[in-house]
Image 1 (cartoon, one colour):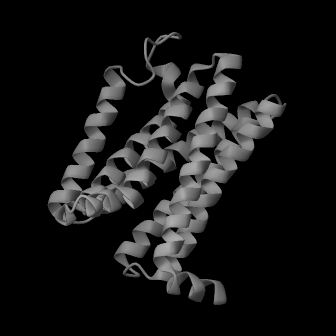
Image 2 (image 1 turned 180 degrees about the vertical axis):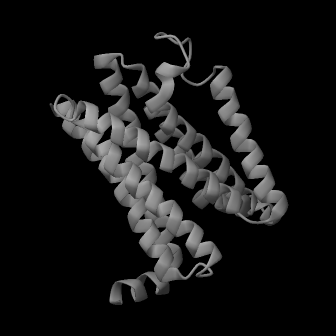
Image 3 (image 1 turned 135 degrees about the horizontal axis):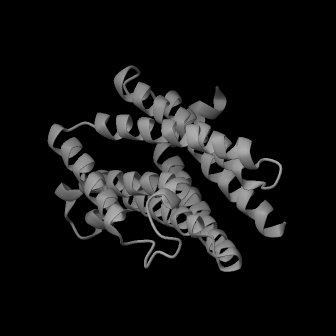
Length: 226
């Protein structure tokens, strides 16, 4: 309990440290995924890389954009950082799921990993989710959409793991990470609806989120090193 007491007493410092750590891990994941793509030319890695690019943008906007607004004396716009965070986070979730499904929707050599009809749909859906939560002043739609998305991702990644566990290392890390992400989003929903953002509960969510990103980074390092 001393750890939780320390975090609560230094909440803002902890949040900055947490955000910087997650952003750094995302940068490393993007670089490792890009390197692996240059070796394998596996298109799923392009969407995987994009997912963590947007996750990095999400955490950067959530925890640091408000400081920019403060610096330029636009204090009334600080809340906007939350909805940038939500938009980028949802887009990242869509890209992560799409990295498992892309073969079902497009040709083997897509023109762009950031722009296509189905990716445009991701951007629109993410914008709609963020706007509805902004207008209704809660984040329930974010939580529900991500719980559904990651539940689907757990099912697909488990299927991939069972099919490829003897020939590929990465599906195991993918499956375990999806379970962690699903658990984190369920806890986020409970924290908002049941526990009124109890800080002890929130710290546990931060730990789960960190494990989610670290597991992917570890998996990529293992694959790149062979």
